[in-house]
Image (cartoon, rainbow, N blue to C red; front, side, top):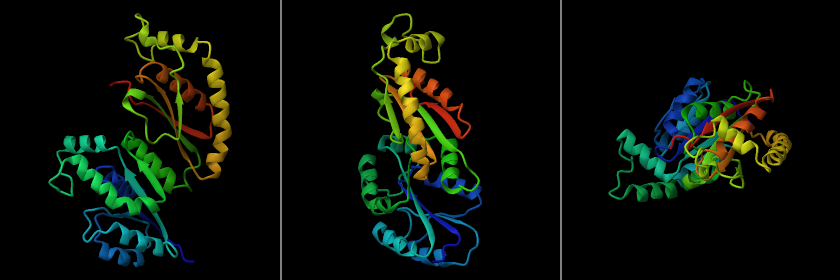
Length: 283
């Protein structure tokens, strides 16, 4: 089997980060080509180009048919080093992104935006099913998207496992990209203590209030041991990017303290690259 250059098919929902990803691939030395007519896809895949390719395909592509494209890719993967990256995002976040950018959805259907996005999801599903990598950008900043792509497609350079720690509030929904979610609502809530209510989990008074509770130490000893045992399994399965989330009611007090403590503990492991993100702290 002749594999040769890497060919990355970048696809997914409009507004979910596909264009940003193509720019990142270009920065990493890939030749990026966007909005390819599907009739030219075979020619580009078969072309004698020595550089790695990142090919953007979505509903804007001329004569786009996700089922036919997926069948073509399955066939070509037998002889070519092809991977599909599918970008997704929560519907409300997509709507907000279109509003903020003042862009019109490329489908340009005379329907409510929610229905337009729902239709796009259905049409793209054949490609989502066969995708090698699924990236949900709902709560993924561009800098972490860059790091995630580097880990997935630049393995020879990057040897450390990347762990992203998130604090969040259940009232704002679960972080869809989380691999592990720990619910810390079993701890007493500082929100109901008048002197602590308006402080957040980075304040020393909140930290002491949470850490001094009866079950806190046992909880952390347990999850630290659990995570350390799971790390080798993640590595064996080729998963070099892990997201661990801690949730409380509002994402301001208990989850912030818990995630900060877990983050500091992971930082001691020189084989890990660790980042932290307080999703709902400023909401």
